[in-house]
Length: 266
Image 1 (cartoon, rainbow, N blue to C red):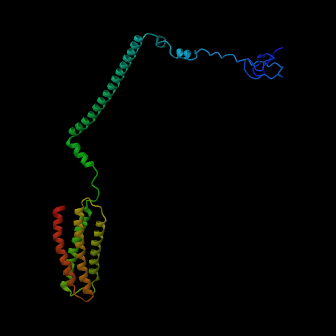
Image 2 (cartoon, one colour; image 1 turned 180 degrees about the horizontal axis):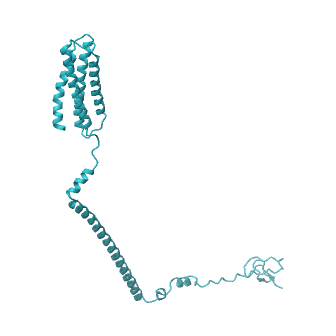
Image 3 (spheres, one colour; image 1 turned 120 degrees about the vertical axis):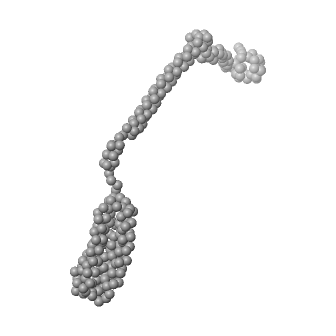
């Protein structure tokens, strides 16, 4: 009866000390056969088709991708390019014509407006010009006519007051007890002062004329005050001549300035 090697499972002669297959020592007590170890079947390598198949799918024939030969592709591209060029030319021509027509219309409209305005100005008659000038608003400010008249009336009042004083002094040495003449002189002073204040607060169309009138009214105030001062000084026991002399100087200055004013503004 044969034994089996406990190492490799090969049958061993009972008298043998070593296994003829693996060469290891055989123990005598090993009388249970050892199942030999079956070697694993060789692994079959699959064919390398997984790479070839995707590549074949990713690279279809040239003809199937474009529906024709390379020459047909070039012809199709040329046709597409020609169509695109034609569309661009049509669009460009339409846009250019639209911009040109709008510009021409705008220029014609502008010329028409300017030409009409020029014609209106050239064909305007002198009569219409005069009417327009007449209806135009006057310059801002007063023409000071009322103040010129007031200045002349004050000048007349001062002259009349001077004549009354001279007539009084023909028969009297002074003015004691004659308050009527003093009050009339004071009224002329107040009138000239009020006229000057009103003119100073008036907006005048001609500032130079206003300033000349203000100067004349200031001289009017000095003339009237000279007469009033002489009367008051006389009533207080003094000499009336000092006040009258001041009034006379102001009168000379007024006559010169008034002549210049009448020459420039009347």
